[in-house]
Length: 429
Image (cartoon, rainbow, N blue to C red; front, top):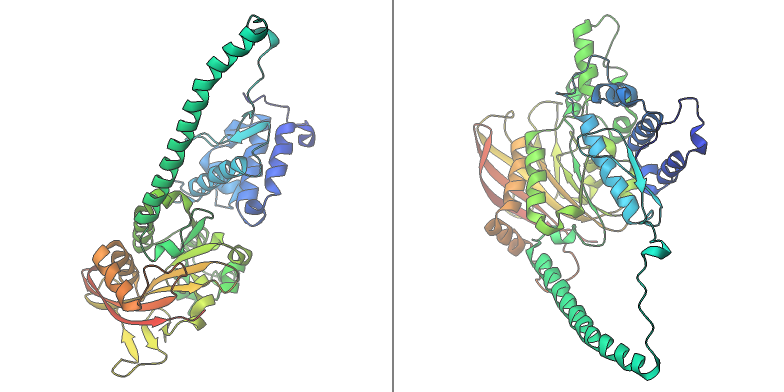
């Protein structure tokens, strides 16, 4: 039960608020830019009983700086972050906070926090059954006869559970396809980072938006100019503050979830703007989209051979082959524009994480169709086997084979229909 307190009551003295403060001191919250503010807002309103403040509209304006007339039906930022917060809270009580005597949760379909006891109450002395005393040797013989069968059953149960655990673990390992087995592991989360559609504003800026400007939101300052029509300024503000992504990104993300099967609970899906540089210091990552929509990809461009070049922002882009092999093209040009018919190209790259331990998988196309084609290749067992053979992966190797592969897709009416492998490279550690 949540006992409401008067709004004038000092939160510092409330055990529920003290629990929230302990949660905020953990790494997942210290490294997040949005979740701490969201948790504080929900906790303060829930403890004070201000449930009228816990609507999606109010949270969006108070926590995320949305305009008062924004449409939650079109902008899912609040729902997305509340889902992330719910997962982080579960992770806290499963690990760091497993000994907490008070637990907080966000019931599905609600934005209010619910606090409840984390420990079962001990039975009172009157509830504990007491057996009648048995005298001397008779008591000992009775105890042996009672305990011995249970020892055998317990040993059998332990053996059965051990076999079941080993069997299910092997099944899980066998079902995890390459190259995802280098990224998704039982002992740590793998972060899937989606490219963001609001970077289409680079077309207004007339230039690429570097990672530093993207993180600091500096590029937004020059987009709304004095004298700009109000409707245009509102549109720019809406796009810049919304979490937008493409169909291709969603398709690839859902493909990854399906491919990882029993391991899908190890995937954490985040937008590019929800990441910060310290996050890359540990863990495995999957980046979806090129640097034009996912600026984090630019951190790894010096590690790969096939580099996306866009001479004029918004115009036709191409892959530059930095070191062409005999018979290879130096340039691979994609579609004239998204939705047109023709050839498009993409790369699938598995690299060591240069900023910390772990590995990074990058799926990027010249257009949305190319990115979608990268997901299609991974989803098809035959195509995966061809790529694995082209890269020369050893089945018995426990060390990841880092590589990049350039793939080509035939696009009709905005849909990739076929995928084939053009060239591969091995990437040294």
